[in-house]
Image 1 (cartoon, rainbow, N blue to C red):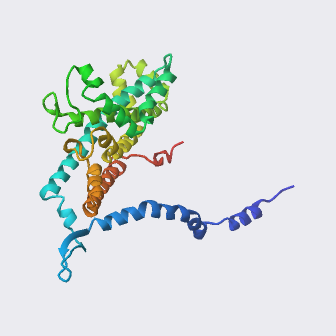
Image 2: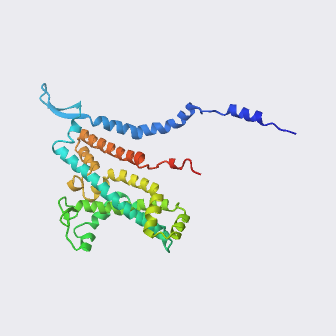
Image 3: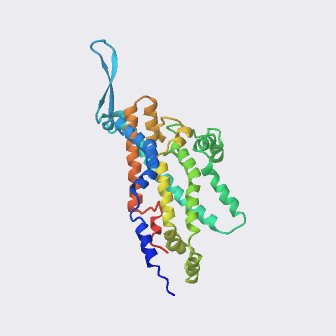
Length: 322
């Protein structure tokens, strides 16, 4: 007896939608897209519009009163390159970039070292992994207060170094050439965020097959050669994503220098703190211009990492495997 299944298969093929219902997809994605538009899209558009608004005080010829008039133009962006506001912008841009480069570089080195240590099997490894997470779990404002106490004139830092450096003074230096507030913020930032990179790299290390290391030992490869030719290339996807997240976070640095050193400090002024300072002084146009430049800066860095360096943020590199 022969049973034919061709008819049911053809009927099922006819009933199965080929491209899906676009209205159903739009209905399901609508609430999410609307939420993103309200929460993220509207503030960006509003800030961009505000960055072109120029406010000027003029005398009303009829009443003789001083009135604030608004007009649209490029004056706020032109102010980024001229006068006192241009000098403040260049200083904040330089501080932001320097914080990011030096801080993230040090965090990568320490994070990879921490990951290599935590990967090894030893007694108390679970406790070490949990304790490493503590600095990252502490809120940044609390971390800033903690390090502010450490860097007090009679604090732990001066006691250990046997110095009397005023770490939060704007013009104080360390070893005669490095800004003391900049150094304090940099140390606090590295202490807090190096464990983040360490944990992400550790996750990448744990998916590397042990057979690769066994083969390297059989071939007589040294520990340094194994690290450079096996560990680092295989952990690169996780490391690139970790560095990208830290770069984007460091470029937006605000709360740590604000709490640790204070507002409007030349040596630790960043683009975020500068925008906040302008906003607190009711200069909304320049504040929006600074924020827009920072937004573009962050977007460019993200684009470079995703397109040029191949940061795989959504797992597309897994397609085609297996």
